[in-house]
Image (cartoon, rainbow over all chains, first blue to last red; front, side, top):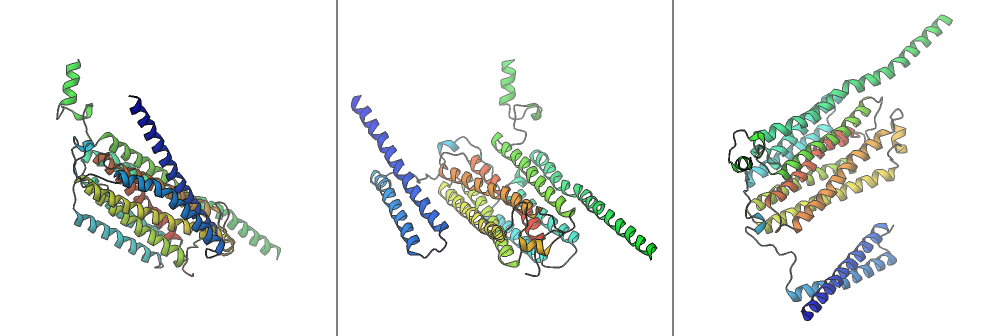
Amino acid sequence: MAIGSIRDVFKKSDAFLLGLCVLLAAGFLVLAGKSAAEAGNFFTIDNLFFITICLLLALTFIAVPALTMRERGINPFAVPDGVTPARAAEHVHFEGGVKLFINVLGGLLVLTVIEVVLAYVHVPLTLMLTILIGLSLVKAALIMAYFMHLRFERMSLVLTLVPALVICICLLFIVFPDSFRTRDQRAAPTKAAQGQHSAETTTAH
Amino acid sequence: MSTEAHVVHTAATPANEWDGGAFPFRVGHRKLGMWLFIVSDAMTFSALLVGYSYARAASDQWPTPFPFFPSIIFSTTMTLFLLASSFTMVMAVKASAENRLKAARRWIFATMLGGLTFLVLHLIEWKHLIDEGLRPFRLADEMAEHWPQAPPLFGASFFSITGLHMFHVLTGVLYLGWVALRISKTRHEDVEISGLYWHFVDLVWMFVFPLIYLMSVNYNA
């Protein structure tokens, strides 16, 4: 009992000290990054010296936990393949193959390139906005349908989610008339004032 | 009473599945929660984009300062990285569905790499604009000279919209890192939910990119 509890204390202090080493190593890495980022000129003796020292210290601190873990055969990154206990009772529903996803990615990339090329074609602003939003909607639909798996979900979920997102787009077009009105209202008085001004000048002459 | 409730909960197909005790959407409550969050977040972003569009359409002039290099090249590369990371994420979900956890984790790391590349490129782009003198409520001197009638809201719209999106990318990378590290303890649905969030970040950029960048191309530079 007593020996067991002493072992526990040692285990805990081990874990604490190793954790501290990892933290310190991370701290020195951050320091190295900071001095690299803030140096006006990267290739100065001072800067290179500071970065080298910080990296060396980080290496020193990370060496102890790394060696300990290797000695004890602990690999925190080991992952078992196959059904883990957490997944045992789960019913997985997944559709779509690699080919389909590559096709969708290809479609998205092509649409993006078309958008960028379109941005360099001189067309009226409203037409360009319509085309860009239209292409973006196609891209969003592709992402939602295949990447977000919505095409393979039940229709009730689709009918719950999609209307809300459609309304988001409609908002954009609902406020456009109002913003044009704001601009025109501001423009109108200056025109009237100009007209009045020119009328005054003609009467004066 | 209690036996009645018991029957409703265990029945495979209740008389009316919308009466409760069933899964009418055929997804778990966490996944439904993420979908509802995505809808509300889409509304946040569309409010910002609507505000930007209003300010722009109501102004006599609006700066279109982005040259082909570096802005458009950078933002296009960022878009390609984000799309590629969406693809790697869907591959991660596929691997997870087939219980190939090692492969799933590798695909998630690839996704995080894509996200981090996006972040770094975007921060370089931000630094470039800030160095030019662009502030949330002040145009850079060069822009103010070119577009004297323009309101100073260009910086506010640019920084707030792309900043919120960048914050989403950052939290997405952290979230994916958390999922990747705990992959042997997660259920498949958890991986799928993190995928939903990541694809949503990608989806938002599909609107931010054309509206912010492609509508503000400077043809003369």
